[in-house]
Length: 164
Length: 414
Image 1 (cartoon, helix red, strand yellow):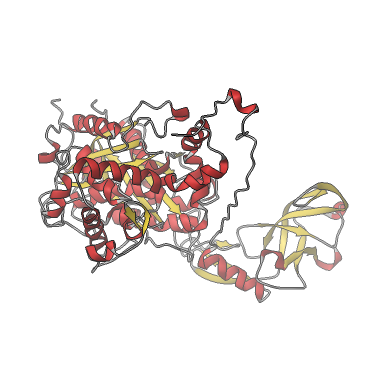
Image 2 (cartoon, helix red, strand yellow):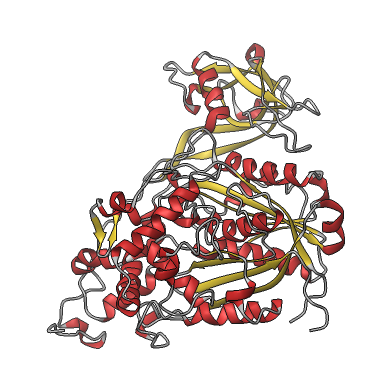
């Protein structure tokens, strides 16, 4: 083929094809679909929008169009209150950014929060309290972010009702 | 090989395919096909014993998607298995469903193939498939820059263009012959409800008017990238008779993988230099027909669905799987033998050339073939179909799946 064929053994003195590095850019999207779009639209109006199963009446938040238990359609949208209950929680002392992990100044509290009237729970930050006061079953209410743009970060976190 | 329990297909479901199904997320997309399938079978979702699913790994940037959409697959608290074999995923999922029922382990199995290609970067996914090719290029001493400039000869279109060149040299097929296949497929797709590229009035001139992507394949000849899903219910003979009007019995399955010289790892393929030779397809066809008791496939097969993203492959596959004599397929297409009302209709669903949701494509072939036997296909052939073939192709260029089905169970006297 008119080209010098480089074998693996002679690579050192020839062009080293194995250590050349190139960047491959891979972009991935994720369609949220009509149902989750309604949820984000709700956040924009400071509302929680869930769906209700047409058969067993279970309420899903975040919404889904199919009941997990009875495989029936769950396409009725319902508005849910701004308060909920801590079902479970954890405390982390580290901050994770894109580049590094470092010790946080204040511990991060994350909880599995079930909005009143919903049968499912969401993982969201718990704020304006301290880890010692956290307990399962405590009442919380939502704190909205300053800039609302229809994004998961619109929920700044949940704080205890009545200051804990 | 005779099976212990006779498996039968009772229902096939699809969701609508398009280039961007942004109205649903991946789980909801799959759910549409599952619901369609269960509804058409008229059974309760609780009657399903096990679920087998698969899609192309890494195409949507989501690994193991079955773990977060189990409920959408009607798989809550049921055994679930994932099978992925690249382009043949759907075919392998169908065969895994067949094995589950034939072995007597499960009575009713739901098989699902899906792909939401608009979510991801297909080229990145294909790079993992093209590993063999990268290895070869490195072994030949190509630099990464030269490799990149040679990528026109890589990925699916590259493989297909080598195949097309070899096939055209062997059979003296012309570009018009390739365009004729495309026209037949896209016109068929226009009559089928779930397909992607519906072109009811496309002509050969229209296809030949588009620019080359990689000679001899033109833009108008290449399959689209689709979002879609397909589901299939496989059950035992006894249950199938109770549920379906016309159960479709799976009588023969085979999957073969043969290395080619172009894509064997480290150039160490089986020395099959000609990519249109396809010994794997010939061997798997022979084995599947043998199981089904078919001696003369060109006479006994009434309908065929072959996996042909590129038109030259359709001509090649119908010959390699024994439906036509070697190099005779272009003539058959010219004479309308493979048309909707022809003697041996091929790809009346529109084929992969019109709709390609990769993880679903190889399942849509046996599914559409089964629907033709049931008489429920979107683009139903006028003649009665007794025996049909669903074929899948993928891996690199080498993995083949075959499913031979009939309206009669496997002959017991064999």
